[in-house]
Image 1 (cartoon, rainbow, N blue to C red):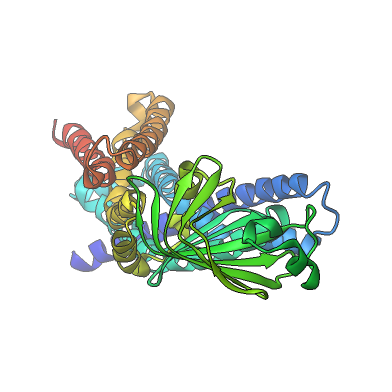
Image 2: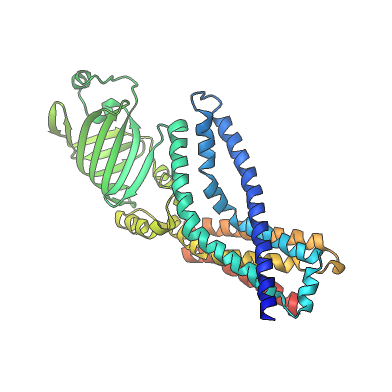
Length: 385
């Protein structure tokens, strides 16, 4: 009896995993083709981008794309597995063997939870590395002058395009350095130890100016700087260049950065490994930047195995209906619709959590818990009601 049950469990697990691999391969293939076409369209006017680079950008996104559609893959795989067992009358044989829905669903539940754990602990770090590299290639070819913001243990680093005149360099000095004072592109690296979001104040500021060829132009040190509308206001800066060091009461550096742009320029949570998120959260809290979006992302990764288990229960509740009862297609459709509704519900709560309309932990865990409750209730009604 025990041997037969274990054989049945292995059979159901194997069928589910094979269906999951096939469905994920189909979905990823479709998404990869669309991504390549979109990248080719964007690169249409930039003939210097090799085809191999375009394919590399899309290929390195695949782990991230796989992680983003895992819940859909689990849902479709469970529905198809249950439908096949139903269609071939294997469910009838299983039930005649004395097993309830909870027992023959347990292999798929265990597989879904295992996939969730592996996705959080293995796939997520892998996708973070490759997505970061894909974003670097994408930025270098399509957005070379993009404003960048990075938070590290040493503080905050900002990069923005600028002009040589913004560095506080005298025209004669700029000429001696071979720097043109026209529209020559350059950039500034701004470093700050701490940050006060209330009035957008940077403390212990260091600014390094470079020209378009990455030649160092000058350095500016200041105890405090403020982000104003269209410029940085630098208080009591000390300017160092080839002419020597000098102090100014105040200095303005034109910028296209805004408070909104800076917040949106933070490293994408998807590019941070699951194992590095706690340390990154501590760094962001120490420097004063908000970390709500990253905290929600971390909690959603922790809730992922439970969400996948919920997808199994939801799909089973809609796809275990016997063929003789009719309406199988309708029930399967409602199962898929319910899965997408959970996905939409998750995105909506995530947005509410980031905007701090609801507690971040509630935003991250509610979809998984609600899905588990709805799926369990539906199966109890189907099996015992």
